[in-house]
Image: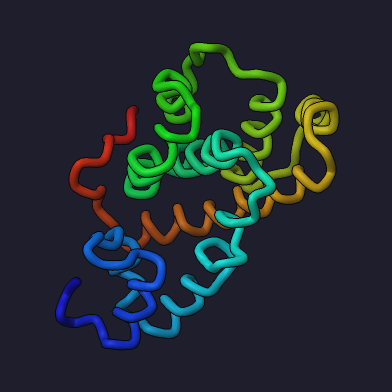
Length: 180
């Protein structure tokens, strides 16, 4: 960890990425401000009660949503981290992972549930509402509680994508390159 990070910020980052593992570059960037990294570590995503930890969404569904939002917003760092550490183990096929970024047909093809998740992720990435056909697809495939969680997850990853882009966080060593 860089020497410029305060002991408080170092301790906070180590709560979610314990040594000997190296924290992602985004966390190190946020650690320049202990109050910001505390809000992130204890907040709605990485905190113990954050959206990565609710246990309500299947890992493949959660990662599909995250990968699509980060790919659509060209947040190469976050997309690569999620592919390397979560996406491959989530149950998504390599073709599906790639399709989150390229928009090409996935193999196997997307299920109706996955298409509903993609509709929510795309709407969040575009900061728009769901079009009528998308709304119908979401209503048919997802329970209302799932819809809310996917909207919240997609919206939070939209913010993370913005942080990655504005802070110009480079990709992590050894993570895949965002296609396109």
